[in-house]
Image (tube, rainbow, N blue to C red; front, side, top):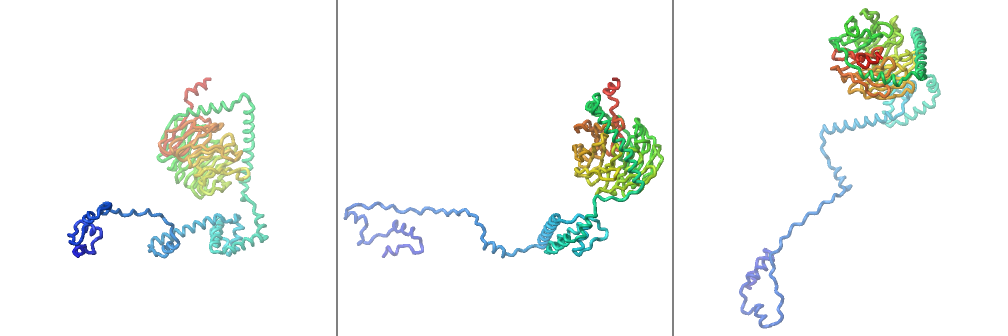
Amino acid sequence: SKAKETLPPPSLSVAPARHHHRLAAPNPSPNSQTPALMSMENPGPLPPAITPPMAPLPVHPPIAPIPIPVPPSTSAAADDDEVDYEVSDDHRAARERHERAVQELLQRRRAYAMAVPTNDSAVRARLRRLGEPITLFGEREMERRDRLRALMVRLEADGQFDRLLRVQEDEQGAPGDDDDMEQIQYPFFTEGTNQLLQARVDIAMYSLPRAKARVDRAKRRLADLDEDPEAEADLVVKQAGDFVLECSEIGDDRPLTGCSFSRDASMLATSSWSGILKVWSMPQITKIATLKGHTERATDVAFSPVDNCLATASADKTAKLWNSDGSLLMSFDGHLDRLARVAFHPSGKYLGTASFDKTWRLWDINTGTELLLQEGHSRSVYGVSFHPDGSLAASCGLDANARVWDLRSGRLYCTLIGHVKPVLGVGFSPNGHLVATASEDNFCRIWDLRTRQMLYSIPAHKSLISHVKFEPQEGYYLATSSYDTKAALWSTRDYKPIKCLAGHESKVTSLDISGDGQQIVTVSHDRTIKIWSCRGTARDNEMELD
């Protein structure tokens, strides 16, 4: 009973209670026998010794298992969908704008993939069948076609595809539309005046003998064993590598825009932003005349190839014809926007002007009559040039294209497509079958008129190329001017660089080459005129002595 009284209360742990009971057991009663006495009285095999239990070992907490990602179940997704999130007004508006932009993009793609008639009469007929006005005030052909395209996309988006199919079936079954389309023949022509007809006949009579003489000369040079065109080209290219700066002169108070040698290189004309044009005597560059008459900045100047008259172009939408002494001979009015470049026909009877009104025009310098208003460029026309035979004219513009026109028939001969930025200069080679174009993409491209394909592409400058011109005798080299403050000479045999004419401090806007190919003039926004020459070298003196 005493032992039972000494037991620990039930609230204590079991293990400490047993341990305490063994260590501090009470004195046994007289009647009870201890295990030692019982073993003494009854000898026998001793039981194995029982080791008293030790304190329990500490148990570490279990390590949590690495969670394995489980794909969300449909029920979890449904639970997420059922959760309502609060969206701000700005976020909702941004989402709506994004959805509208995506829809517009899809509609635009669908519109470009949709077949729309290209014939204007077919476009009008389809608009009529769809119940829309066939034309709007001031609407042109391309705008009308775009309106039809947008209408078809809208009908398809509204689920009215059957209506479009019915309209197309009606068009296929209509007999009158095919007749209308057969009557329209492209390209179309506009009726010209009798003066233009006479000018075309005159140009043909002028160009055909020159073309025949050029071809005969080329054949004779190939057949003549004494002629060595390769050696002659090497000599000219070697001489071009000797160009050095001979003279520099301040040309005006404002930046210079154009320059031109006279036919015998005895005079030089320059134009500037001040609207004043000046005539200089060569080679001392002494001013002999000042031409005042333009009310806006002058953009270009060109000497006549047959006499000492010169033509100028200006931002006041006019071109003017001057005598070399400074007297005004004639003014050519008719362009609707500022003029860019001007060029004389080789016969000296006609003048070509390029304008920002997307046209170039041909004028009779004797009567001042506008003979031809030539459209064709989708953007402003910047440059114009004439073939050495006088049969072709080339125009270039801000639409990144150059076009070659046959002046004898009025037809478009070819379109030179390859530049990725506006074309600012174009020029024919004296050999008659090469054309060079200068562009804002820093490239000068060479084209072959016989194949109507690009022959070579020259990465000529680090900035836009403002002008390009072939050497006027045989075209053995060409010169380019650029806004990177430099001009450069290139061989037309392999189109490798010959010489870099560095000396200007600002953009070089124009250049010209004398008739004998021995002098080059460049003008720049730094207001200076620079003359480059290869006449005074020791090698030339030795050749002349020989």
